Length: 111
Image (cartoon, rainbow, N blue to C red; front, side, top):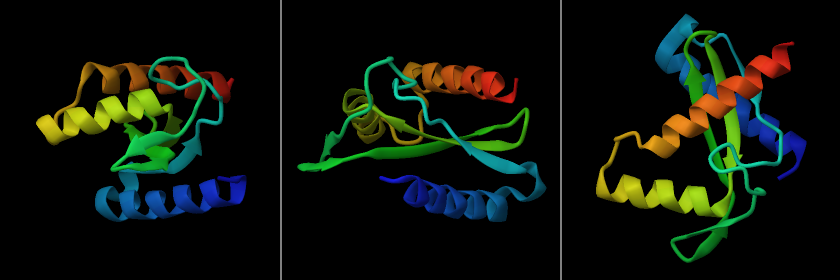
């Protein structure tokens, strides 16, 4: 994905989040660092339903009202998809790790 594609996807996710959560969502930011925020490996494609795919994700950093977008490495993406199949809508410890790492990266970005 190039920067224009990522920005378009983030703008669309922001519009959806803003429509759902209103003024609680103030903006968005995309984590561009290469290391996966889940495990620190390089970002690569995941095997999802037999196809190689990039895993574009986002979560809301509630303290700042920022939608943070990010890619995962294939290994972390596959772990999350498998966990979601077993326990839909349940956050895992990997989600917590990802969110903590992204919040740290966003705070560094601000300074």
